[in-house]
Image (cartoon, rainbow, N blue to C red; front, side, top):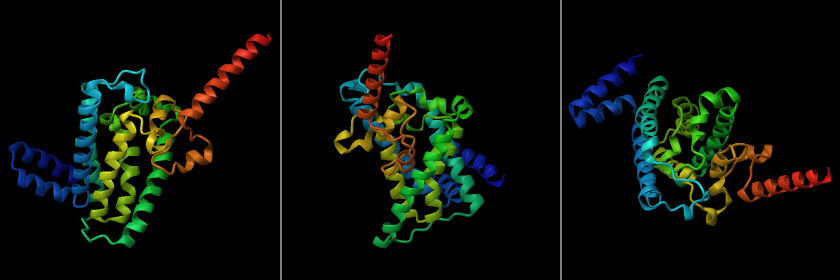
Amino acid sequence: MNFMVRFVCLVMVAVKGNLENTWDALDKLMPFSLVPLCVFLVAYLTTSFCFWYFLDRHDRRDLKIQKHKQIPKVSDIAMNVCFNLFVVSPLYAACADNLFGFKANWTPLTLYDLCWMFPLAVVVVDVLFYWSHRLCHVKGLYKFVHKRHHELHSPIAFASVYAHWFEHIFVNVTSSFAGQYYIQNSYFSCLWCLIAAFKTCQGHSGYDWSFMGKSWNYHDLHHECPSYNYGSGALMIFDRLFGSLKSREEVDSLVRASAKAKFEKKHEM
């Protein structure tokens, strides 16, 4: 494909070290997605670095939700995370922008714009992430694709996109950017990518954010108990509809009730 040829040429230009030409080439490859993608990358790396520098490297398991588990090493996941961030994500953006003709739109945002763009983006992510993520828990896809992300039962912020490349495309990028391709406002996409980077890093950080509400710790429970909390964000629409939305307190209560029932049954025999 034409954009693939241009992508290879871009890499060759980058190797030569001509930064200005590299940016111009990237802008032609990703006229809509380039700046929002850069915002996401900077926010993701900054947020995950702060979690690692101030907490993870000091082994602050006392602040973790799952205090009994070791904190994963960045070196063990860096190759996969960097591949998804710096290869898969730009290729996805280049494909989408070229195939569908998306262009940058720097129209200033109004309050009215924010009032419909933000709720729309939140709902789109909630719906697409739930169903694409839920599909990845089907036996075949889980074994060959999604299992990699669940290797970390107690993840760290940097591991937010530690996943099979197919999952990163199908679940992470598509759910987050589908709404942006419909809205097509570059200012809003930059704002959205900033929020998305922080939220996904926070959700995978493993640190207790219950002081901000139960929803801030939902995804950590999903990594420990994969049968709950498939959704993303504050809405969790389909988890609420299908009864898979659980807090840690509810799960602990279910475990205790199950253990009690087994104990009573054993002594009745």
